[in-house]
Image (tube, rainbow, N blue to C red):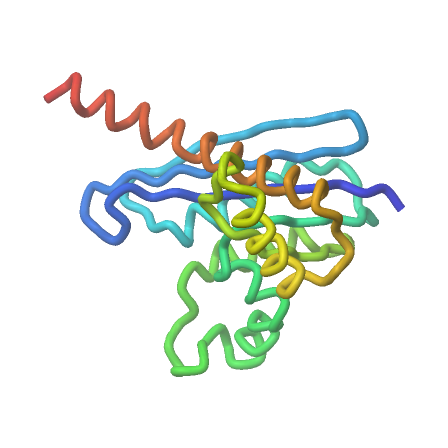
Length: 187
C-alpha cells in the first residue's frame, strides 16, 4: 500500500469577528515527491480553515487504497476522527451531543467522502513550536507527542513533523498576510 504523509494547518486573523481573514496550508509527501498548497477565505473561522486544509490535500490524491498519515495541530479535526464524533453526528441527523446542528457540516461531509476508500491515521501535533528551543524543552514536547500518538516515531521523525507543521503555518498565513496588505493599500 502506498503511503502519503499529509501535513495541514489553518489560521484565522480576527477569528469569529466580522471581516476576518482565514488561511490554510498543506503539504503532501509521497516518496521523494512533495506538493505544497495554500489558500484562504474572508469571514471564516479557524476551524473551517483547518478542515479546508485537509480537504484541499485530499482533493489532490488521484488514487484510492492509500495509507494516509495525517498530521495536524487541530484537536477539532484529529479528535473528530479518533473519537468517531462523525459517526454519532450521522446517527443523530448531523446534530451534536447538545442536539444542535453540527458546525461546518458541509465540510465534514466532503471530508468523509474524500476519505472513503483510503486508510487514514490521524496524529495530533503541538502547533507553534520553535525548533530553536533547547533540546530539553523540545524533548518535553516530543514525550507529549508520543503520549498522544504512540511510540511509533523517533525523535528525528518528530522534528521533521514539527518542521512540516511550521511550514504549513507559514503557508496558512500567506493568504492572511496578502489580504491584510491589500486592505492596507486600499485604505
